[in-house]
Amino acid sequence: MPFGGPNSERVLILAPHGRDAEIACRILREAGWATMICNDLANFCVELDNGAAFGVVVEEALSTIDHTCLAERIRNQPAWSDFPILILTSHGNEPGRQATANHFLDILGNVSFLERPFHPSTLISVARSALRSRRRQYQAREMLERHSLLAGELQHRTKNLLAVIRAIASASLDDSYGREAFFSRLHALAAAQDLIIGGAGRGALMKSVVGKAVEGFGRRISMEGHEVFLNPNAAQGFALILHELMTNATKHGALKTEEGHVSVHWSFDATATDPVILFQWRERGGPPVKPPKRKGFGSVLLERAVATAGDPPRFDYAAEGFTYDIRASLAQQRQTE
Image 1 (tube, one colour):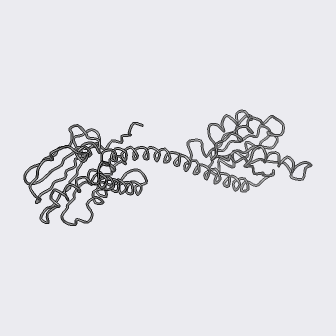
Image 2: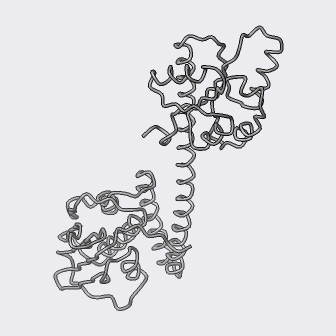
């Protein structure tokens, strides 16, 4: 498909009298361009709306008829567009030639003039310049569209992030320990955002999220899993989950003793219709495990930080060590605004 769409690189030709249209059409087609001869200016304007790279127009077609429709389309074209028009003129020494040229430049903008009779190579050269100009415009359009898309995504991500911060703050900022936990969780959230930004805002690899959370513990923590790319919500959620698990393991679990160790494992659920990841955190070698006496915000976070697929997360407080399992959905979900 052409660079900017099915009709984006065709040439519109308006030369209703004589053989100019036939000659220009033949030359351009032999050079590899798709062309369309328009019967009149109204037809030219309609086809312009359907897409074109540039136009070839004889001067007489603009001088002898009302060209308001074309001038309006040029004036109202989108910000990225500056449609090139090649005007075939008569001899340049006629009276009023410069005034006519200035008039066309004023109302049509991106205009080039080619005096007849012309050599085929001259027409091809000017046409190539027009096409290069139009392709740069298509590139500008893509950049503007991408900028608009990223701006919308950034707005959503910011709202989502602020909602998470508010939830953490409301559950944490009750005492000095809570304030410490809040800033610690906020730091984990910021680290996740760094990974997401490094992924062009599309998300992060699970291995990177886990590695960032457990860095500094060396061989005491092993991790193994498939090459999984998490969407931004899942990356953010798993960063908070891993931070909570690391905090608990350091203060109360396997990482509190020198002999303790943790294994982190994740894999795809091949039986699921939608993308689902099976995640397990398994502690061994630490002090005797006891279930918490009350359900705090950390437990709520471990339950709700990522969207689950089916059953809720499993907390196993076996004597030999704590284990956390979750079936997490990797489908992109947006928070209700």
